[in-house]
Length: 420
Image: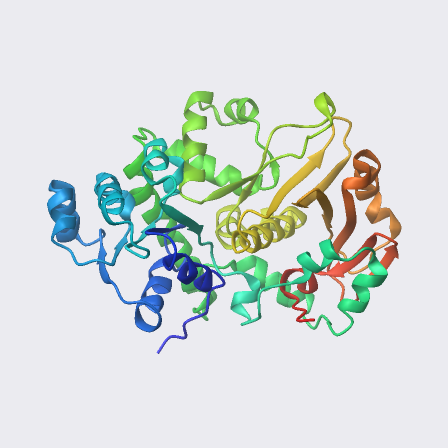
C-alpha cells in the first residue's frame, strides 16, 4: 500500500470546514488534491464525493446543474469543479439559503479565483487554499518550518541563535541536488527508476496540453505554446518582458499574454512581484516568473541547460519552497523581490506587518561578507522597516555576520522547527 504523505494544508482545511459553507482547494493536476480530500473523508470528515472527470457525472452536471445538485446529499465534495462553472451559481443559491458550515468542498486544477464571475459568486462564502507539489519538509515528514516567524520575532541574530541552538543541518549537497532535479510531484516522488520519472514528466506535459490548455484557451498553434514552455524552463527566475519574448519567439505579444495567463491559471508558473514601495521610478516594476516545479523545468530544459543555469534552478526551488510555506500561513506573509534599474537586487523579500526580511540564495558552501552586498544595499534604502538579512547557502553551519545578518543552510530555514 502506497504511503500517504501528510500535507501541511490538511488542518487548515479541516478548520475552515467548521466555519465556512464552502472550502475551495485548487492546484495543478497531480499535486495530490484528490488524495488529500480522500484522506479527509476517510478519517476526519464525512461527505458525498463526485468527480467531474467521470464522463457520466460530468454530463449530468453540465446538462442540468440545478437538478444535479438538488439530487445530491450534503455535505458534498466536487472534484475538478472548473469543468462545469455553472455549478458555482447553484452552490451560491444553496449556501445563501442555508449557510451551514462545511456544505461543499470544491477542488479544481485551475485557480478558480482568477475568474471574475467566480469571485463575485463566492465572495464571503468560501475559504480558498492552493496546493502545490510536495514541499521538502512534507517529503521528509518534518514539522512545518517555524524559522521565519522566529526571525521576525527576534531583535537580533544573537537572540535568534539562542533560539535555534538545537538545530543542525545533516543534508549533503547531493541530497539537495536530487531534491531540485526531481521536484515535488507526488507520482515522481514514489517512483524509484529515473527513466520512469522522465517518462512521467513527458506524459504529464502531453496530458496538460491536451486536457488543460484546450479546455481554457482556443490555441491554434500548439507548437508555439510548446516553444513558450520550453523557453520558460530556461528563463525561470527572470523578469517577465512580453515584448522581448515576443521578438525572440516570433509570437505576437497579445498571444503571449494569453499563454502566460493560462500558465498562471493552471499553476505551471508563479509570479513574484517586485517590492517598490517608497522607491518610485528607481526600481524595476515587472514581476519575476518562476516555474512551479523544478522537476518539470529540468525535464523541459535538458541536462546541458540545467548545468549552465544551476544557480537559477536553486533559486527557483527556494522560491517554490517559500511560496508553499506562505500558502499555509494565510495572508500574513508576502513574498517579493527587489531590483533597481542600476542593478542592485535581492532575490527575495518576505514581509510581515511592517517588517521586511531579505533573503539571498547561494549554492556555494562558503560565504563571505561580499555575499551580503545586495542585502546591505537594500537595508540602506529601506531603513527601519528592514528587520534582518539572510544568505541561504549550501553549507552546514549557521554563521552570524553582523547584528542583523546571518548565513543559514537551506534546511534550517526551509524545514527547521523550534517549539520553544
